[in-house]
Image (tube, rainbow, N blue to C red):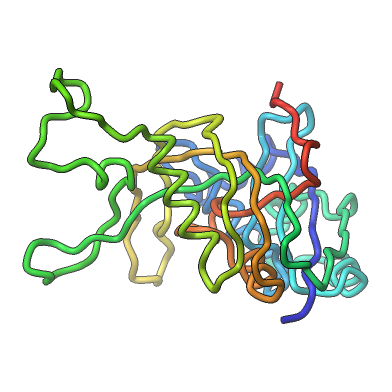
Length: 261
């Protein structure tokens, strides 16, 4: 696999929101995931960063993402004027783009701190394993449906915490392809959000689909187990909905993460 580069954009979110809403790219829950997916694709095509993360709570909102394009090539192609959706693309402020190459060779045994926004869900099938698969919160799946809910008083019953279940889910994701081992993890934010995945478009033949589910931010420390596997993991991302703002691993040297203000 070729090396990855980290892309940083400072979009005009107000302008992007107006243009995206006019096209039906933002769902009832206000999630920007599909809007950014569509906007980045319109602006950059195959070199669009994915996975990516919108950090809207920053003093200056930013989009971070990974691309497999060479940084010089990426800068040159990002300067090409848009053919369609000019108002959407211009809201990205591509003239202010920053691109930085990541290491090509990730050293096994190296530890790194991380932050990631994930949608920790599991795919399930109806009883009898027929019909379409669905997604279920990994925390709810970890609770025996025949048992009382964690809000009920159950003597001697030790219920798993949401943080522990999500850490176990994350550990499995990091271990794919032997990429990395989770050393520590804590959940610093959680909410349930409604996300849009298939907006109605003329002639597309696909209806509008919105789904509700867990939306968590986890921080911790990992240890690289396999360099090539870890590079592939970064480019692929964690879990599902990776093309819509979930699953990007933000990395930093150990000890540099600070609490979000």
